[in-house]
Image (cartoon, rainbow, N blue to C red; front, top):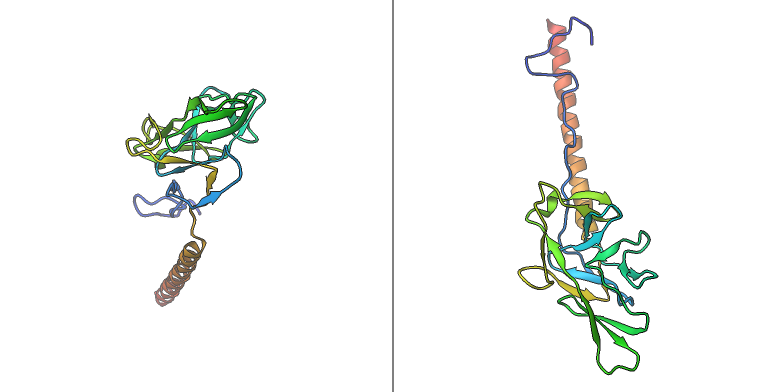
Length: 207
């Protein structure tokens, strides 16, 4: 614009809209049964607790886990340790995880399972306020509030389902319909803007 351009009070160049935030969707996804005894799904509200290299705790709904060389339950790829740290004995023949998060193993030669750890999960007053840090991990923030830690299935926390993973909670058909509706609204607004522009051009020419 030129130096002689005058703008109404309170109006800045480039006025318009921009994205200032995106809303996170933590509604329950569908259950996918797997063959991995370390795969876990939280059925209900809650997040698994993951120890990051910097010592901070991150939170995730992704329940895909494996064992590292020390027998600790960790996330695949990055190897972040599930909290609280639970170590599976090297001679364990099988792993059982109850809906309340109790982890037990069957040792060769023993008639009964041996309990080796207890999972905890955390929830937040405002999960939408969690800060994403990548790899399906989130950190608490001032907006999310402090984590509320507890035993799965207790005090409103979700239960753990062994050998299952939570799939995407996105309904493709519904989102496609929303996309089409948004496109139509955009086209309608474009036509309105074009009509107003033509009217302004006509008025200007008559002056």
